[in-house]
Length: 401
Length: 69
Image 1 (tube, each protein chain N blue to C red):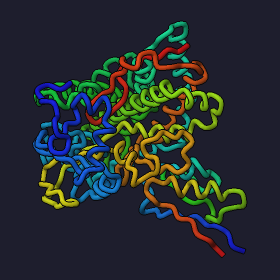
Image 2 (cartoon, one colour):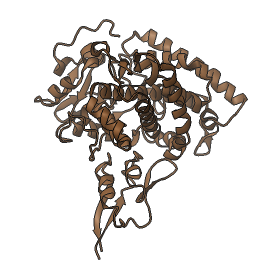
Image 3 (cartoon, rainbow over the protein chains, first blue to last red):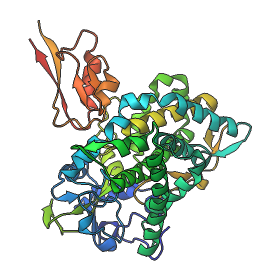
Image 4 (tube, each protein chain N blue to C red):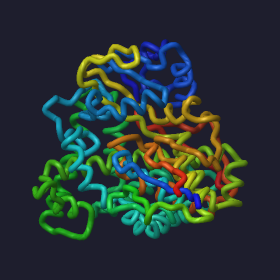
């Protein structure tokens, strides 16, 4: 993943979220920064960036959309031009107020709890299909044989895209989200390939409207105006990119935890009604997503001299494990009753797909626990985690028993 | 008689949906997933624990619970 980045020697002043150690186990790194004299780390990499680790700092920045813009939410060496505002590359996640409000409002009904509820039966059927294909094997890769496939199928079905294109979606996701360390030209190429694919799908829907999310967006209006081709394409890019990598990571991390923590696995098998509560705790403790912001003007933030166009990372998983925010924050307590976690962000950019992600995670775990009640980690050293801003297992060898 | 009443600060609610998942007798989602209080927000007998859990799990601190006479 990392190309020409030297290894990090001092996380306080030279952090790099693509460093292999950060991918493998970021928790001690966040703990060290959080408990130091300055709980906001700095790096000169990526043209200058900051890494808050306390829940109070992460939430204050998430709420302050005046000083911290969402013009780009993926930190790389490339800052999108100022003219990219207000829409950004993937509205509404890349939009600031006031444009953000309309772009978000138009999308949310498709992801409401009511809309998501209608997708549960087909999601469960697909999970069972994946499970049936694994039966009879001793060891499976729960990341690639199971977790990865579920959000790909769900979002492709919602958008009305060809289901046979699953492999292409996965390539787009990996190249765009996990390729932040690639040279700018390579990044432009991967974005270009994605937009060309989407152009073909959108044109097909324009010519042949149907009852799916793509046609819904093509018909949607903000203040009486249709969204336009560019807006629809970029919003669909968001749904593909943000919906797949993140959910895949959450399902994989949850299976990793249960495979390596027999007591928690046994309890959920015995008490399946506890799964929704456990889902929230697993989301808290293994929150996959770190967002990025760009500083809009020079500001002193809690003693840090932030400059306009500096990046700021918002590591929600670090915030969720802040002991000032929550007692026993570094422990996974699957029946935790008080849990204000921010795995889906805070403020106006709360993950638009959070209800869908929760349903997929719960259904994926329920189906897996039903089928493989005694699964264990087959090879602890064989587990590989993605680096960057979406963290989850990319290789997860599990003995299914 | 004193009873409990829940309230939502609509300006703070961002639609995480924890309240209507944990206490569906007290809260409901609107068409974009934001929450509203069912009826007058008075917590019926037997719903007190679910009301408190809804308050304690809102990431935006948008829900309050007060004694109501």
